[in-house]
Image 1 (tube, one colour):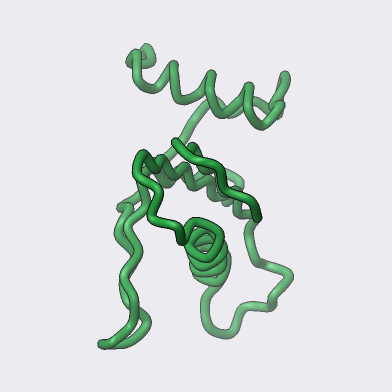
Image 2: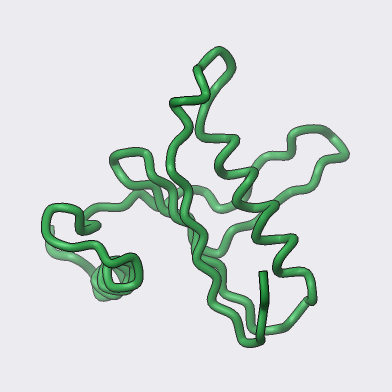
Length: 112
């Protein structure tokens, strides 16, 4: 099945940004539900702009922020920690944790 224009742009963007070449190139992605379930009733919900899951288990989150909320360093760390921790299940060894990549496209300066 031919790629849609959006898929083509997404693949090109991610491959170029991440330096993926040849057989390492991203050629297939699964777009996941971008709202994570809370750990507890009073836990914080996260909503991801774009979450993709590669066949090898690598997860890539792309966040786009136009308005500076002045909390991006903390939010980036929190989102990545949640994604990373959710890549294994109870009883699995930590060696099974999957790579997690965070890409933030911001309309303001952010130093981490």
